[in-house]
Length: 116
Length: 114
Image (cartoon, rainbow over all chains, first blue to last red; front, side):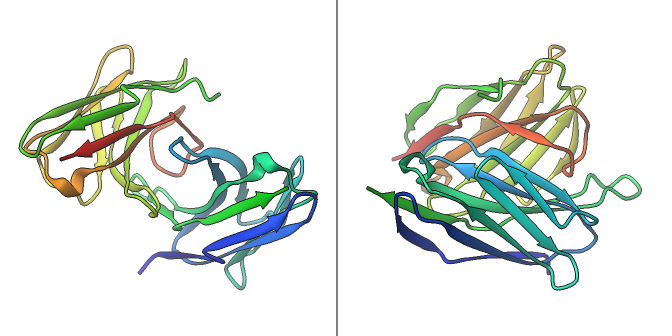
């Protein structure tokens, strides 16, 4: 069964500190892995997209890693800001094959709270 | 901002009623997907429309239906509302059909069924 598991479920850190969020997946056939930031009551906003051959990708203070062998990804946030408070969702997509539109498998997200 | 807009932003309906949610896709995008996100959960895929035709459907009953118009905007219709339909409904547009292409989400419509 295709699944995406994220940890921790929630996290509280102080402003200025770094943190790392984890994503483990069992998805086949793998197409790409995405990290989204979702503010409460808003739509998700894409942070990074990584294909099978990419090990790391950065977007400002956000750095995502992907280990396709162990099927693990992490999202590292550097020098956190109050505006980083949000849910971070890991999404793994499957390939389109022979008429199949592929699939998106969402994790439940990690809720990050950055305190002053 | 992603350029994807949804309306209304909030809505309260009574059980048994019908509701229509709207989505305007990003300029140049011909594909729209709809998702349901219950509180504390990840989004669940409802269906996708590509060039006015349904291009895949998730595990949702037939009372969830959709439309896509020639300008690629889209509607999600839900009939016979149930309390469990209360959720954030997200629309995402993309340049190509399929679910593994980059998608840009709208801000969502918060539906409450009482």
